[in-house]
Amino acid sequence: MKFLKILIPISILSLVFIFDYYNKYYKPNTSFDDESIFLYVIKDDSLAFRDSISKYIKSEKTFYKVARRLKYLENKKTGRFKINKDLGNNDIVNSLKFNNTPVNVTFNNQERIEDLAGRVSKQIYEDSLSLISAFKDQEFLKKNGLNEKNVLSIFIPNSYNIYWNTNSEDFRDRMLEEYKKFWNKERTKKAEELGLSKLDIISLASIVQIESRRNDERPRVAGLYINRIKKNMRLQADPTVIYTIKDYYKNFDTIIRRVLYRDLKLDSDYNTYRIKGIPPGPITMPDISAIDAVLYYEKNNYLFMVADPSNRGYHLFASNLSQHNKNKRAYIRWINSRGIYR
Image 1: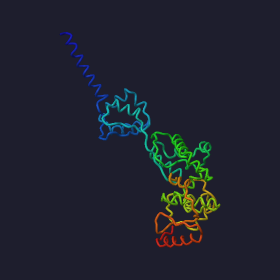
Image 2: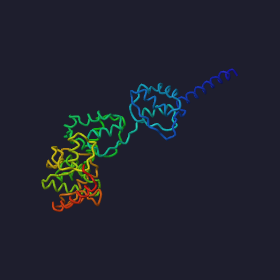
Image 3: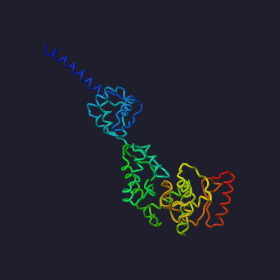
Image 4: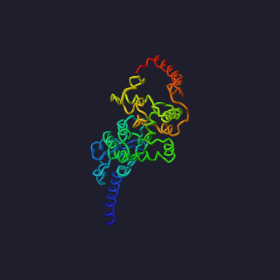
């Protein structure tokens, strides 16, 4: 009997302890309806962390008790952490320790390295200035045979799984590795057959990219430019003149729908009405379809082209100047009728 009198209080205390332990550590403490949420954590920003976590948990008091006991608060890591529905504080803390989850970083058709940095900075933790600094790092450029004019070439438009807390240098290096993977044996062989470097291929593809928005026409456009290169002719590509105008006047936000004769005289390494050969770097970030259009170009006899007024998005092609001038007059009549003077 005396034994029972001792045992019962101990049992009650044990149950109270177990109940309290369960409530603190394992009782569901999430307050969202989705199957999971992502919490973005910045290591040294305690106020932002408190504000963020408070939106997704029922009891801040029990969460912080557990977080302190598990020594999480003084060892927070920057990252994007996945927290599943109906977790207790113990599992929430473990998720914040170990469940760093990548984001899909996507980019395409950026005109300049600065535009790319701005685009990427909206998807990972690093800011655009840090990214620009990493992209233009002179030691990195020299080591990899690059310069500030052609470094945009190594960024192949796609969607990549990357940790949100990836630093600028690691992001840049990852993109260089993806660039090397892109240039597989088959693509490398095609470039060698063309007698062009990989960087020249991408610069030429950037012109094809802007010249034709139609994937099915791009190999034909590429074939025309390859013909001009083989004949030692200037490319005379209007997209390079538009880029030259933007670069010359330092205004990449301007919209130019018509190239004027005076524009052809602007002195620039990108103005293919003045220089022979391919510009020193891409005038935009070409899609994979545009790069492959150059590598697998259509073999034809075309040397000239102009936009086709009757088939929007496509071009009229010609193998001689007489036919081209006829096509050009039709285009000029059409553009004048629409009141497009710039």
